[in-house]
Amino acid sequence: MKIIVSGEKKEVADNLTVAALIEQEKVETPQYVTVSVNEEFIESGSFADRFLHEGDEVEFLYFMGGGK
Amino acid sequence: MNSRKRVLNMRITIQKSEFEKIYNYALLQLPDEACGLIAGLEMEDGSREIRKVYLLTNTDHTNEHFSIDPKEQLQAVREMRAEGLKPLGNWHSHPETPSRPSEEDKRLANDPNASYLILSLEEKERPVLNAFHVESVNGDKVARKEELVIVQEVENG
Image (tube, rainbow over all chains, first blue to last red; front, side, top):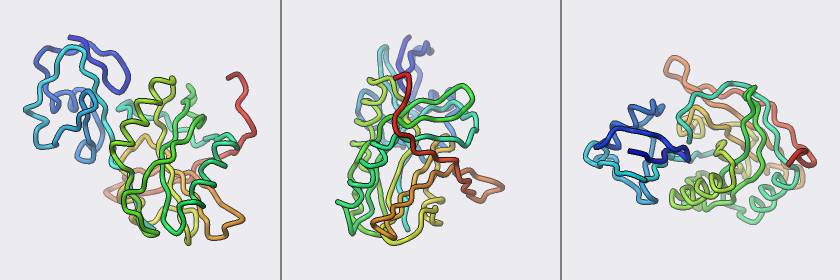
């Protein structure tokens, strides 16, 4: 199936989970990454259970913060 | 952010008009820290051109910390993609301290491909903007200064 990952069209296996996509995309420091699918934020505890579907748009977002 | 490994070239440019947007917004947000995202182009040699800055909400609303609203972050990233730009990192202000990453800044800098811009308003009439790359070296976070150049305008588009 075709999905969009970080703005790029990708051909991926059917029934791919968010967790598997993170591994497949070799996302660095994934423990600090928030994932959205079609603008919906996915709970990190659900990555392994959240299946992706044809046409889904996935974004990986790093938490952005700091302090003086 | 893109999961592709960044080709390290420490040169990054920002248009003067975009720098002024950051500066003016950061002044308006005082005494709080201000923050946002940077977007632009990454060249084949790894150098970067900031074409657009995003002025976002510091959900911490203090002069000691910042956290970018994740919903605004997602919306900004989608806008960047729609405009053919790439997320390049973030910026934030230090209202009272120098333009260098604090320990907290380094601890929370977890995107290995990002450029982190820090605007110091220690002297409000003389803002100082620097860019950094933060990476983990043997378990420690190390910040390296990038070569930030403020340019009048971008040629060829």
